[in-house]
Length: 210
Image (cartoon, rainbow, N blue to C red):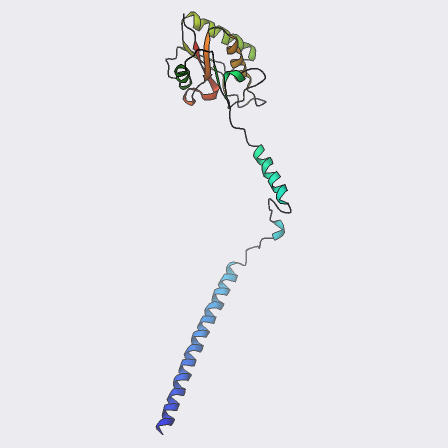
């Protein structure tokens, strides 16, 4: 009799456990259905992306073609600005907007050239060429330097502008200014001004003093 009671008790416990597990599984399934319904409701107004409308930069291209395309893109980037020394300063080497220029005669001490580049001097006069034609600018440069020398000045500056809006890559007034200065006498050296004083849009000039 005791053994029958024990068996019935085990069957009751198993049935209860099975009922609880079934209830938990039912709840879990119900939760999943609710989540799915909420997701579908939230996405009903969303239009799927059409794979045919996607664009790949290198789609249907070989590796060599891809490299060639990247090289073409890089070549369109502006070249790094040059620092043109006096040996390169001639009409066969036109100066670009971002190029810096250094010109000096033999005998100029490096420390003096360094001071000229950094504008570490007392500026005695300056000339602004903005708004002038090439002919007007050339005359103005010649007269300005002549008067500065006559007055015994040593350090002057000419503002020629950076020429970013030039029709080509070579600013007219900037090139004219450097070429004209190179032909004038009593100029020890000249170079692009530091950024605080006009940068590549201005030139510092050191004159010979009597």
